[in-house]
Length: 166
Image: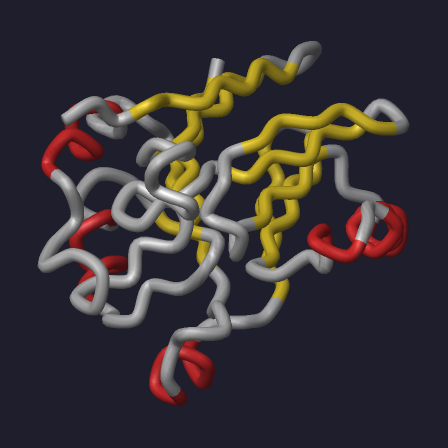
């Protein structure tokens, strides 16, 4: 089994001074980490890479230094699963755009961010997952800080949203 930590919309240091320490507890034994954009500062990747290799994309709030260093769409293959990651999948305007992205790239799993709301959705035998934001849930009075975990075997995909209780 391989375990992948999923995180997005950290907005360090604009929405939080640092990555919440609870995340390091949950990501302590992961094999990979996927960050779905809006890091704001490179140090987010540096800190996460102390735990596991990081696959990341830039988000709309990331500056030119990050945009020049990270792609808009990235991917990772674990076993025979094709995992894509994008920041803004267009899901706010309906599900057609995200389905098209997954179809074009033949992804089994597509991780996305941008909305700051965690979500797991299965569609056409594909997993679409947004880990939410660990630092800036929107709206904060309804949505809680979250990350996600993917457990993968050769036969099975098991997603889980993890609330970060304060």
